[in-house]
Length: 576
Image (cartoon, rainbow, N blue to C red):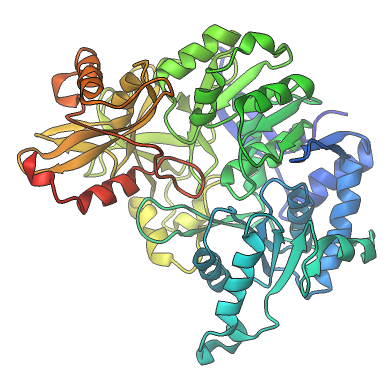
């Protein structure tokens, strides 16, 4: 049976076979859980959907038939707690396979899933529960997750909130624990045992809310991105043309279930293509673990953030049989050119880059079969009309930097809500002001900056706030970071602007050293000279700080914003 994506997706080609546009066909009742998961279960019940390796090394395989039965039971279980169409449920499940069972069940109910990173604080959980009016939290008994959830629920219950009694109602939020049972908390396993595996389809509309993803936010409080039931279809191109997922293959994306990257690489697009998803529930990352997994499970396509590749290239890759691995990709933050070069030398595989946001599907990438241009994040996805504009909203010419924006392909419509491109957020929960801001002028603003060359290749510069303005020059941190990564002493780095009395801002490099190097003033000078010889004089880092670790957002990205904030409170900038 052909993969199901063909029922919904068509590529429009030019005379040279290049994809110029994507066409989607679907009913208003489209629901990924019923029309993809359950349909595979009906037509190919034994088809492999999910391979899960636990922290103890236990491998469990799930067919689509397994997932249909288990998600039906989970839907019935949640229904008994009053969860139905439009209700929201938070999922704090790390990489447990119960995440996939739960999110499919929520789709079947017409409910809203809130995938959440286990790294968030008790306060973060409470804020998310309040904003979303969540009726339940399904959390894994690991680390201190259950304690944080319990504390968050209690803080809401104890709040003096007479203006909204529903929020303060002690019975309004049900806590369900996955893993080792906890006294006084509902057990996922026990509830599942009692639940029926017969569940009748709930009619949903493709424009209904399906997901709330809280962004990490470079500035201010995280915002809740709303995606509807059409969102899974936007990731067909992601899986097929970027990840290189293939029918009956096995794809591994390294991402926690709380990140939007998990929706990109561990669920929707892959299953629409009929490709299995690999999930590794590790506690501590070790490069050799990932390499052994790629070998033993015969992974066919792999996607990971640049930090993972930085560790992989330190290993002797010749010890591992990676012959089944045919496609490798990266996204999340700029990929250092030196790391990409080393990985290709050791494996023969080209790491193809991609770019997108929690608010959207894949916007820019180097597709399967195309050359990865050094330093480029690729070309615009045919899903979107991507352009670069200046501060006045005018499109810039090739070779000039600008903000990445998405232009709706349908024009002449005053209400941008009626012309939403596939995969672009439906709104920010309870935050109409911010939503109008990102759609100012009738175009979607990413607030990320790039340069495009004459061949349509984009070169990422950073967030609007990340671009450094020093002595009248504008400096993209990624370019300097690429050169720093070529120095043998540098394992990881972040380049930011540092307050300066004389220059306004100077270039600062925060560096984690490789294990066989010791920090010293001499090494600082050597790194500075190394960079100075390879970039324009105004771009080299005039300030270098050696760090044991770099601050990160809840989804694992290096946070330049936190470094800048910390430096703003420094007392010594007047000396520079």
